[in-house]
Length: 326
Image (cartoon, helix red, strand yellow):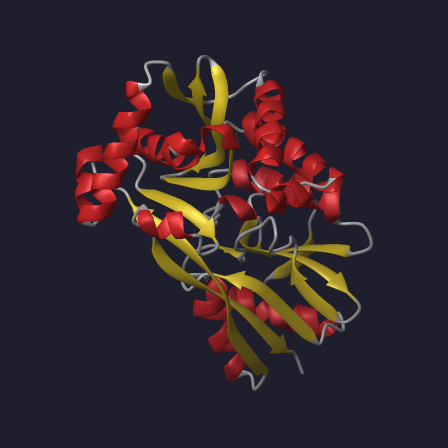
């Protein structure tokens, strides 16, 4: 079979994502062309993008969204804002794709493929690593972090039943106390033109939540958040959750609905309402809304914060892997 490796642009990748004749597995929101383009525009100074596709005729068999610095290639993106990454491959064509990719990288003078952060079900771990080992390449993998996720049942009551007795009681008690204030409301928002107003509110709450979050939100990171929110809203993927008390925002979540998953990307709250647990309950109520929408998975994303375990999340290990190409 005849294959060609083609250098792509962000726009050409976007056309592959929207073209149903290609059967590529865009496994998460973090590998979507629009997400990668926003990341590159905000953080990509000084690093060469290397967006490669493997084609058989006009059919795209796989995409390697990489960046190159010297003799090292790594995923385009950074682990502080892209919770996990992967290659985009047509199921069943992994062997063809990865053999051709490794040959091409070697021809380009790449000696190290540094891949972070990988889920256990990533095609990089499942398919690329065995192929690299079979070629005699040195492969080193190590634990990097954990992500937590939750399989969603058909109803909120079924979800509560999956929690242990103590946590189930706590969630119900806190919800009851919130509603008993008589001035509380919650809604999830699919934003359009009003995205900037909601993002302003979210960022204001974010800087109030705790010192660590305030220091994270540098001017560059705020620019990324704003550009990402506008872009994802334009694709219909952005979702805000908000608790209001006396019509004033008390807590918010920002996340993305993609396929059957909801990705909880970040959250913020006003510390004045700590006694009402608005930060936790905003997540609970957004989770409830996801169940009602028929979502199948809730992804708490990277990090082992206690609330993720309290709400029933289960750990998914994340790995970093280095392949020495020779």
